[in-house]
Amino acid sequence: MSDFENKVHEALANPRNQGEIADADAVGTVGSPECGDMLRMWLKFTEKDGKRVIDRASFQAFGCQTAIAVASMATELLKGKTAEEAKQLSAQELAGDLGTLPPMKIHCGQLVEGALRNALDASAATTPSDDAAPTLAADMHRMTGGRVRIVPLE
Image 1: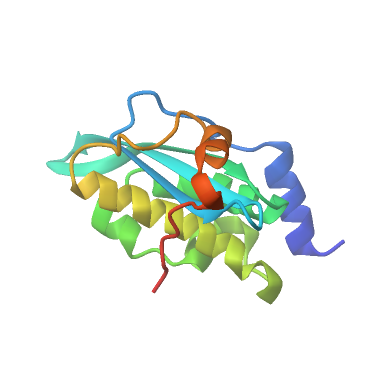
Image 2: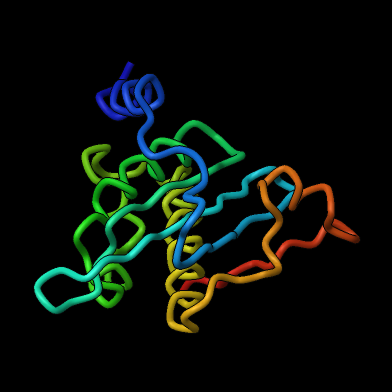
């Protein structure tokens, strides 16, 4: 087993920050029910030293093990960052201690990055999106025609 695979297994054995933040300031969802990869990220902000920073981040995911591991790492990395600092993080940076994502797993980092950017865009609007279903599973089941909002990554 490679070092990368060991780190993914370790992250899965002890995932951090899974589940909803009930009083979240922003929620972002990205993915596709057709391929089965979906991720929702919640952000809670606080004031620190005159700046609005991420106090807590959490996620819920349907997808491969690497997407879950990257989301777990990302939620830890986001703590204490401003929205602008968080927006500057690449998919690779969000993978944190997992290291360089293999080419066939880059989309996992992009999924996490997309959910984060979607949440940050919602945060800029100052209110969480009211159209988000209470759970990711509910989102998948309520979609007509199998559509989920796909957030393009630049």
